[in-house]
Image (tube, rainbow, N blue to C red; front, top):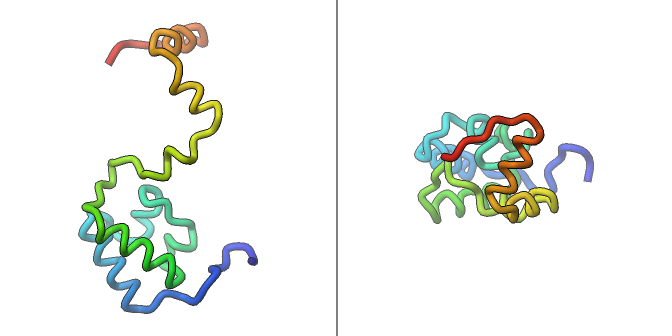
Length: 108
């Protein structure tokens, strides 16, 4: 696959219109506005989707009431080893390490 090229046939105008309608209903101004929260690539942020990509995003947005502030379910799968180790640390140990590095730490 070449750089920044879709791996399938382009989405139909109907699919793009439906996807844009769902994005606007979820509170986004368009594809670019939804790029970060939904994990769109730069190509997708410009409104270029394959049929399969458009179907997947449409199914996701229709299947759930999408909350842009909610963490995406894929974010947990992308944690590095260091991030998993940091999450496993007790709060006291993590706070002590941050203070040792010069950070100011306070309880929530």
